[in-house]
Length: 265
Ligand code: ADE
Image (cartoon, rainbow, N blue to C red; front, side, top):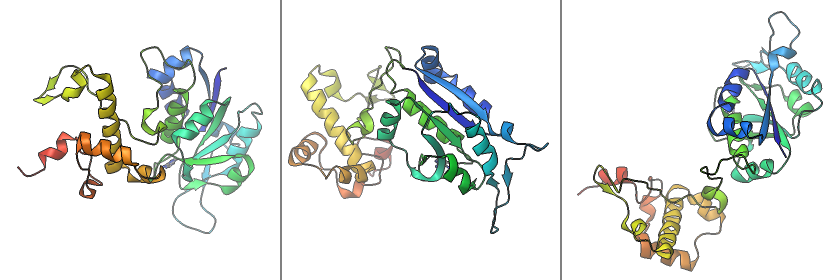
């Protein structure tokens, strides 16, 4: 089944252009997904094609008007549900939502701009609101592209043989272990010897320990969410990477050479 994505935006070219590139472009050529981009200005009825206005109640900035959004949705009854608005006020977009949407028939993304979207448009035609992170973008286009790319790469048949659809980071609630490729030495930095050992069980243990250590230092919230570490995980960490102390929390991680450069001799 082909996943269908509709995007409502003030910058249709930005969406179309990125979606024709790289993984997304190849996946479309393979027929794994289909994109329709709608310019919200096409649904205005004044000569200036006005999409924004000042906020009721006062305040800085402009608000995206409800009418062009509602009209665009109403004039395309075949738009796929859910209709999802991108906004820093939305619920967090996560890998599990990406999985859920990749398993469905598609979705419609509404890109906001300015200080926000008239609440009545959200009440009338929007099913869900998501944010791609706790930071503020100038508009929803980049956020929509994040959503599209993370959803489409999970659609069966979207990726070629040499492209991996594994979602290792997050799929198990842990960040991915570090990866290395040839050559074996880069500017004096060697590949960890275990990866050259050919001992697959040892490699798997090392990778697991690295994932745990990384997650513990960079994303302690993910460790807390899965209920902490169990005894076996603690032992594995201690054995493979040594103590991962609390002083390392918020640092970039135990194996990062940039960290080591700042440590005293
Ligand atoms: N629009 C502006 N900032 C955003 C964010 N962080 N996530 C989703 N949409 C946005």
